[in-house]
Amino acid sequence: MPFQLVERARHAVPITPIAESGLGRWLAGPGKAAAAWARATGFKAAPGALSLVPGKNGALQRILLGVGAESLWSLAGLPASLPAGTYRIDLALAPEAATDAALGWALGTYRFAAYKKAPKLGASLVWPQGSDKETVLRAAESICLARDLINTPASDMGPAELAAAAEAVARRYRARFSTIVGDDLVERNYPLVHAVGRASTRAPRLVDLVWGDAKAPKVTLVGKGVCFDTGGLDLKSAGGMLTMKKDMGGAATLLALARMIMDARLPVRLRLLIPAVENSVAGSAMRPLDVVRSRKGITVEIGNTDAEGRLILADALAEADSEKPALIVDCATLTGAARTALGPELPALFSNDDGIANALLAAGARVGDPLWRLPLWRPYRKMLDSKVADINNVSDGSFAGAVTAALFLEEFVARTTPWVHIDSYAWNAKSRPGRPEGGEPLGLRALYATIEARFGTRQG
Image (cartoon, rainbow, N blue to C red; front, side, top):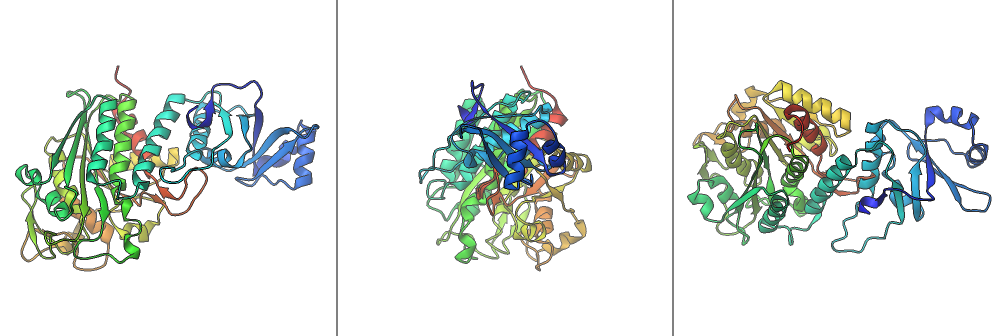
């Protein structure tokens, strides 16, 4: 019974969704006992409001649920709120709304229980009629995979463990999988990945997953996999480190996206690159004002060791671009500036391609997984000028931090290659129905919907 969803039930308690604007019509319709109960208890049908209607014998007869405009999350709070039993939606839904309702319910069952036993959920939902079960399970399983990876403490989710998680996904879908580890990164010309990760006792590595028909359009994903970020020698404060286990959230998001693409057998040649490192403090750590020659040959002055994510992405993006794919997507928990501008729930989107950017924004609005586009304002590129190298990894001031980080990454991708950069928090700062506090692959469903629409239907 995955996600507390069942095929059928002989006796299932009906759930009646009621919009606030439609409460008056519902109260005037049939079902006088439930309407009387709603009046007596002051049920107003505000979004998320719940009323348990008893029958004549005291048994639960019906659930009244206030719903808003977001069909995806309308049922998400119910698995933890309802008494043990089986329930069904007492309303004919369009297929898309039925699918959203089932996915919301499924995500509402998520609990991170690796270290602490979670209360058992006793409420189950009969699959809403017309819902796309494959779509629901694909999305829910992938989202929960990403949540688990992000929520796992760095003590148990280092570069090797992140690579192992990617390898497990590769095995499931028979993808090619390889890694470059430790000093081999220098030999294989990934100097920035090595420079960031060399101070840790846990060796840095580059994960490389390839799947699909070699003749199909190439879609390459690049995820930031900093498994813990101390800031390096430019050490973070104690408070600044408290959520740094999530600094591999970009990698988790794009591993989940790769899983969805492979599970749906989309007709693409998929490649996933994850530079996986730990940014630590030791005698071998990179230093401020060091200069490192990147994989692309661009020399980079290290203005700040705490701007490490863009460094490892730079080498991976250069490799991704070498194949001239139809699309490159990178995702990273990159800058505090993006959070200051947009808050924790809205990832910043940058792109050198207006068509793909507009498609992503439209998909995000359609599936309830929003993004917000920020500009690649190229006049700010001069903020990254260095006196001793081709580029500095940080700007010379505090302005436009998310923009200058994106401009840094753009140096490693050809202007002719369609490229998307997503700067995400990858974390729910507070719990909401279906979205508990903790790891969250923001933008995942918008990315999948866009790639599915752009590159067609499944293989096989």
